[in-house]
Length: 236
Ligand SMILES: [Zn+2]
Image 1 (cartoon, rainbow, N blue to C red):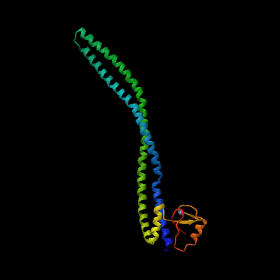
Image 2: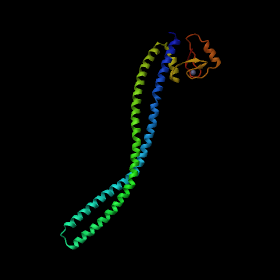
Image 3: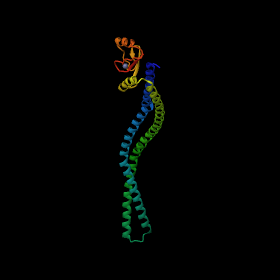
Image 4: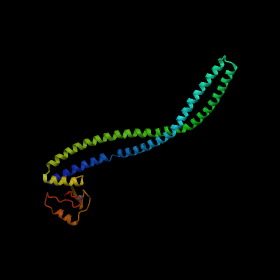
């Protein structure tokens, strides 16, 4: 094979590797994943806000519940004592008084419990609502991560075999040409050579000046001028 053909196969190998690399870093799934993760982050914030509003009301409600249960039990105990008591009239009156007092307290605590219940219900619903919105997002995130993992594994496998083929092609090239090629590749990426198409370097896509086109046309076979813009070896 001529130097031109060797360079062309190496250029094509590198361009292919570059395309697969780009595919791997520009998966549409990555765009969706980033959107899903942004939504999840917003929902986490919304959940924290909803929980911060819910927590004090819910704990006050639960405290009122416990207090009501305690007072109800105390009232029942007093009723039992009264029903079975053999105490004197004064002691009975004291028990009656206490029962009266406990029942009043219980009434007030039950009112408070009801108010707090009415207050906590929409706050509970807000927390549950955020959780319900987050759940499908979290599931979608899991699916996307699995898909991205599988796609990347396939692309990595492809890259491994492409790089192996590339090594064989590079080894076939004259060392001095390979050094020039790799130098340009290291500086500009994608490939170290490019083709001239309609007077343009198809590596950097910049038009060559008429003078450079003339220079390029009169090159002896298998000599290669560098693109004046990107420095890639220019192939016919
Ligand atoms: Zn160029």
